[in-house]
Length: 94
Image (tube, rainbow, N blue to C red; front, top):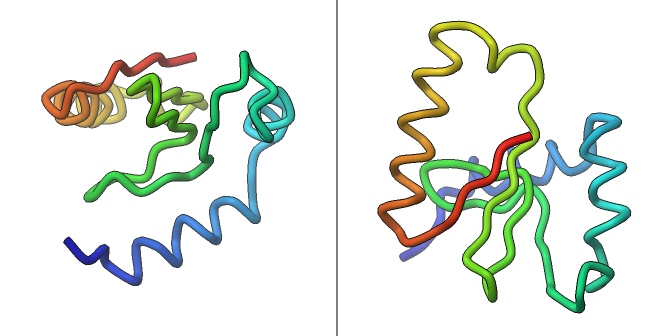
């Protein structure tokens, strides 16, 4: 399945504009620094872009900022988490 080029470009832009928290976690996960597992940042799992993804573990790590603390944000996150879990992925939110 070919990924949406606009989604891929947006993920690339997000990697260039990481939050301080994303940057810090990326320094811990990049280059197999975490128990020798490969993580990707701002990885497309259409129709979403996840903050960090490890294929070997089937693990998605999401760093939730203030926008996630609204009723709409929580509903969107629940829908998104359910979608990812149906794919067999484990979602961890911080």
